[in-house]
Length: 199
Image 1: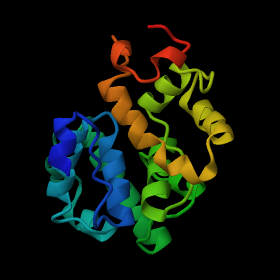
Image 2 (image 1 turned 30 degrees about the vertical axis):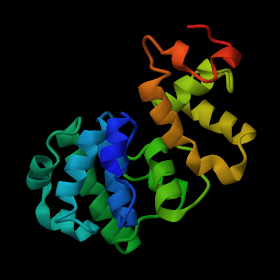
Image 3 (image 1 turned 180 degrees about the vertical axis):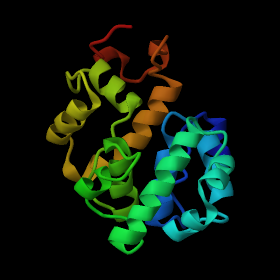
Image 4 (image 1 turned 120 degrees about the vertical axis):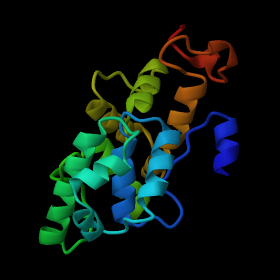
C-alpha cells in the first residue's frame, strides 16, 4: 500500500497500523517540516525500540537525536520528545492525553499535531490544518482566513463533524500533486471550473 502511494506521489502516513497513541504523537511531531517518506523511514526505525514514554527516557536525548536524524530540526524535536515523555510518565501515568487542552501543554505540540493525535489515536472529531489544508481551503474559496487556526474554526462550521478527521489526508495529497503552492496544475484539477482562484 505504501509503495503504491509513493508511485502516485500521494502522502503516506505513519500514523496507521499497530501504532499506539504515543507512537502516533511522536510520528506527528516528526512529520512537521519533514517529507512524508522521511517521516516513515525514521518512524519505522525508531519504533523498533520505542513503544512508550519510558523507552524514550531510557534512550536519552543524544541517542534519540541520532535515531531521528533526517527529519527537520531533529535535535529540537529530540529535546521536546524527551521533555514530553517525562511529563507523560510523571503526570499522566505514561498515557497520552485525549483532549486538546492537555495535548497543547506538551512541548513541541501545536494544534495540527494535537488534532492528528485526537483523530488518529482516539477517533475523535478533529481537523488537522497544515499548510496544504490552509492554502487549498482558501484558494478554493471554502474559507477566507489568514491563519491556520482560523481555517480550522471556519472548516468546523462548513464540514459535517463526522468528516472532520478525514479532511487532512486528501487535502495533503491534493496539495502535493495538483494544487501546489507554486505553479498549481489547474489544467489537471477536477475543480478548476468552480475554483474562484484562477492561478
